[in-house]
Length: 117
Image (tube, rainbow, N blue to C red; front, side, top):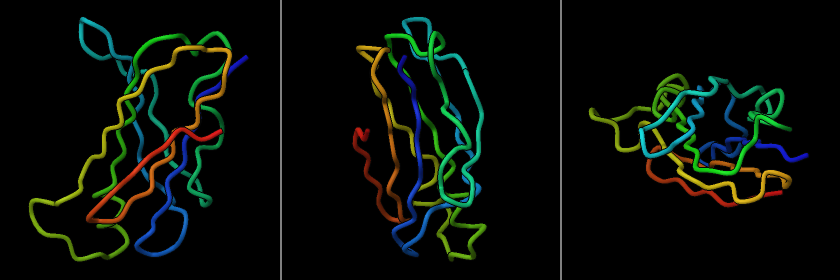
C-alpha cells in the first residue's frame, strides 16, 4: 500500500523547518476539498503519512505550506506583501500503490520541490 508524505527544509538557515502549517487538498473538476491539516515536527516532517492505504487514491492533489508565517516566526525581516508566503504544490498520484514523497525546499525568496522516495 502506498503513502503520501512531505517534509520542509529551510535552506536559508540550513535546517529542517519546524512547525510549518500544511494543508492537503484533493482537487477535481468541482474545485478542491480539504483532506488534512498538519504541522511539521522538529525534523521538518509530519509525524505520520498525510495519506496512506485506501485513503490515497489516484487523482490530483495540492499541498499548501505556510512558508511566510514560518519565516516570520523565525524573526526574518519580510517585506509586505511577502515575496514567498503560501507555497502551493499541485501534483498527481497515478499509482496509489506507490509512495509519493513531496518535499519543499524553501527560503523567503525561492522554493523547489521534487518527487522523493
